[in-house]
Image (cartoon, rainbow over all chains, first blue to last red; front, side, top):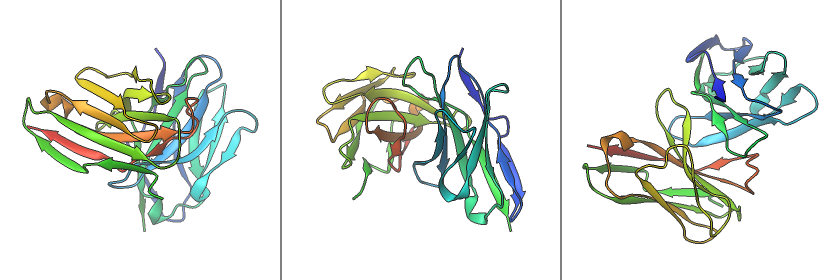
Length: 113
Length: 113
């Protein structure tokens, strides 16, 4: 079965430190990969996507993500965390066999001052 | 420019009651979706409408019905609410059914007692 895993329920980072939120997937073919962010009591917002090309993609708010085909991973990164980055982050994958997204369970990111 | 508007924001129902969640968009996008979000489970697709006049089941359609009233509006109906339908419901839209970038409403928090 196709699936997306976010292995950490919560990630704690000190402000100013680099952050990584992990995502791995089990999907056949060449999927499209996405990251979304959800702030408290809000809908999800698109951060970035990978379709093809350079393995490092840049998105909103200084975030970037690295695609690794051999490890089937798409980890979200930021060089220097801000307290305002604290939110719930979702990884999603769109198989090339259909258009419906498969979502990870989400990772709560907490940035401490 | 509101984007995606959901009503109501909060609702409490008794088991067996019915209600309709409304979603309207002003972005002239073709595809609309209803998701539910439960803790630790990410987002699960209930129903979607790839274009005006079409609707299709998603991953968890049982207990729900939908209507794509026109290009702007997509409603979700619970005919006989059950406690298992306690969740946060999100409407989302994309320009077309290739699903590359979702825009979300702010959600409806539903409790079924």
